[in-house]
Amino acid sequence: MALFDFLFKRRRKKRNPDFEEGRDDVLMSEERKEESAEVDKIINEKVKFEKENVDLKNNAERLAYLGRLRDTILEGRKQCDNVKFEYGRVTSYLKDIQLIDNCDEEYRQTITEAAAHIVELTEQRNEIKRKKFRISEGQRVALDRFEDEAPKDIETLLEAEDYQVKIRNDLRRLSGEKHLLEDEKTDINRRQKTLRSITKALLVIVVIIGVALGVVMAVYDVDITVPFIATAAFAFLVAAIILAEARRNRMDMVVTEIKQNKAIALTNQVKIRYVNNVRTMDYLCAKYRVRGATELDFVFSQYKEAKREWARQREGTIQIEENHEILINALAKIAVRDREIWFSQAKALIDPSEMVEVRHELNVRRQKLREQLDYNTSVMTECLNEMEKIQSKKPEYARDVERILSETKEFKVK
Image (cartoon, rainbow, N blue to C red; front, side, top):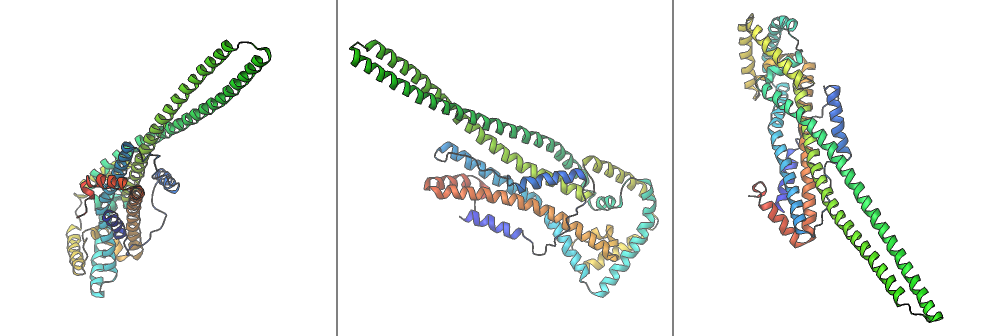
């Protein structure tokens, strides 16, 4: 199908050959490490998508299952689209670093001199700032770069942390429900086994009584009509009870399996949301060098207060602006796209170790985004593979798949 080719091509394009692997020692708190470990455990245990036990011959169940697979693919597509813009911006930063590293000596000297003046003047002005406000240099640099985005990111992080508690509770509740349903199925099977044993015993008893009555009639020539009728009535009564109980067990089993499939479907959805939510929190905390929304809110308030103080301390402002203009012009001449961010990272332009740190931070951020893209792509692939398997079983199933996908405009291939 063109649909599957289209999605797989998108996945291949997402791989960037310019990607540089970052180190694993990402700056994060112990709490965030635990969250990441839990996500990795979920992925490593391959529970990111559980196949439901669906009776494909049942038209309603089959269509509902295909609808859930389609909705899961749409959710994965939505998550991928949300990450792409940020991923492209981080990739652009890395390409700018390559342009700076490979520029001509003439431009390199101009950039280095302007950056050195900016760093010197800025450090003089920041000396007072560092003494007055509880904010680290890394946090200050991050907020310099993302000041406009910080309020929205604080709100996003707060919502994600609140949502994380709900997701944890949902996972625990669904896990308990799945265990209860499994126990219920075991109990139903045990009852059915008991009924089969009783049926066999009843059959043996009836045979023995029948033989005994036959022997008595043959030996003593007595009328066995009444005992025979009584035995038959007893056997019929017990058999009716057994059949009724067996039918009730079968109905209970059907209801239990329906509940179990629903629990599995809900668990799949919650697990996908759980992984994406943790990845979002992890990325935002790494972006601002904080441990959570509360710290980010505090640091941002400190930053805003500091900015008001800094506004009153304009020593060196003119010189900094002049060198800033020189730096921007020099970067423009070597085709650097995101030039303004280098004002807050001027030290990296004169200190190779700082540039390594900047590159590493960008690699870490891009790796986190790519992990989220890879995760959602793998979920989409799992669902597509499942739909392909169903499609290949019968022409009728293939038509159902085509109809389910054609009803959704996102799947219409132009």
